[in-house]
Length: 558
Ligand SMILES: [Zn+2]
Image 1 (cartoon, rainbow, N blue to C red):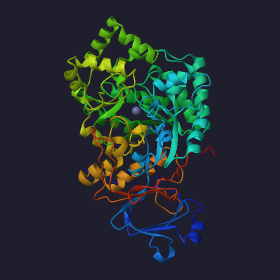
Image 2: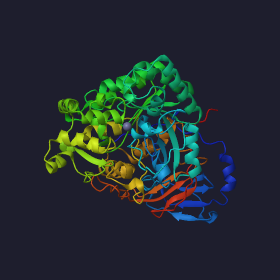
Image 3: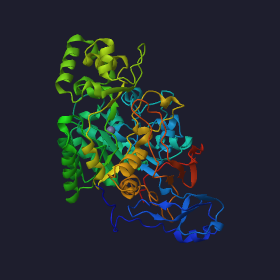
Image 4: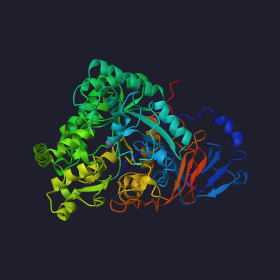
């Protein structure tokens, strides 16, 4: 089954008012790509057209004389699309570790929205224990060599900007760092004063240029936030016209209640909301994604501004501690380790996990983490490790939590293909990899991370468009470009049209493919020949160029 892209109407892009001037530049464009099929990002049918670039802008799209151009690239049999705008990324530290972000560039991503799931690295309060916050962000903290020299969102954005990046960067402020700064790590409701403090931090971060706020309601201390707190923060987000993105409270037995919670925040505060990586775990819950989509669609029809993102895989990845009962995490990592070391509490934790677990132990793979003094368990399932150590699987899990001091990262299977396809096909869904820009040659290339960091978009375009016909090429590109630009108010990008910034990807729809797997993840995608950011190639002839033309977006308050 396929769905069409959007029809003409108010979602069509406005052309940049500067475009009339570009006729002058067209006398001698810097680059002319000829013979390709333009899939322009709006969802309209692809068409044969040449694309001329002058400076950092698209100068013309149509039939253009070769003689005019300084440089001509023959892209026959290739598609030219807007560079992919990753709606859901976690490269907050990766971009400082390796600003070339190879795993993102090689899959055609030209912009990433970072800071998702509440796991942003800013803002931090002036007196916040940054190390304690950092210990809760192990999923994104891929390089211990990166020094945290910022507190405010403005300082973080300047840090990224001064170092440079291959791709454009947009950042959400993180509720985790904000709640840790104002309330601490305890499991309790915030007081009215603390809620006011958090509102001020959100207000400041949005004024500093964050494109929105994210929360991760499964991650302590965000998990302790009550409705009043979320609504109060939603009011600030609404005042700025920004977006509030939610890693929801539950992606298992309580998926539908969790969707309702997000929609209630939107309804009561008037803010725009984004439901992150909509999926459900556990066979007993399969089919609930379709019901969640019905609820989301109904909310949209009654005026709630809601969108969602999704990536084309049947496994997720998170901290191993997410498999532990929530109460074990109260007070932070130190408290968790004390509880795991106390025999009676430990038995209670084991019993609690066995009683509630959604996953078969074969479906939990160790993906990363630091395990001092241990044989490296990364790349093996909990079931395998249990056989190896001759221990019950739940004991292996608790040992790994202790040995890694809470840093262990897992990949967890247990999702259904039907749920995934329902989400991909829904008109409100857009593509977000949930991945990081990893560098196999650098510190971020350790472990066996989820393949989404390397293969999200090529997998979408190869498996789900070309092979399975779940989406048309035009719809998939729209969900990966202009739909995301509109959602996050990223200006002048996401469409191949004169006047737009020349962020482009050139790929062969017949061969584009992901090669990263769960057991051999550090493999670049293929089939993408050029990736252009602001008119400069970051990937050319399939090879990285080493350029860092990416810009850091600051939300426009004008
Ligand atoms: Zn998340």
